[in-house]
Image (cartoon, rainbow, N blue to C red; front, side, top):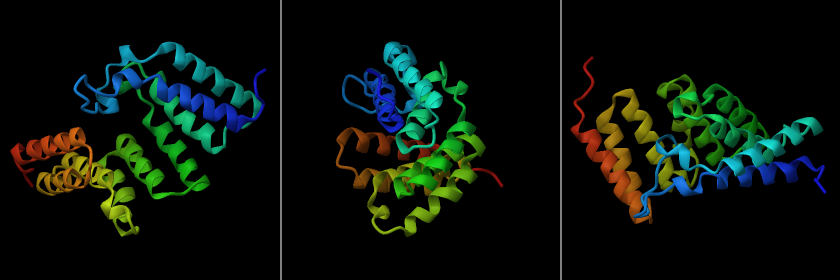
Length: 196
């Protein structure tokens, strides 16, 4: 029997949509592959269909505003995009805005910053992300420095970006992530500074 509890359906949809990308998330050596760089032909289309079907049920039941339903709707935006450029980042940003109002947390805010950067440019993302350095405990979170490094790099501030990537590398316990962050720092160091 199909549950009528929209949050149960939301959790199920979220699990299915996230699991659909498992085969594309890391290289054979274990190096993480960023979402935008994943081979989408390796995504499991059956799991995506199942997740989207559960999202349709949630909508019919009028429960689209719940925590899991919002997270599943975000995952669905990625799942529907056959190419990275097809991603509806403005919708994702709006969904993260709603999620931040419903369940505010520094990690949600960090993801909201990424979405705003993708939708509206790196300056918009930095406006959301920079205040997180004032949140206790977040300065030791390697992904905050990694995201900030990425947004600074995209803004043309390669020196500051390099410093953030190196900081992220020093904080992560994952050897593959550390290597990735050091690679990003080296790329920044090799990039000529933006001309005024």
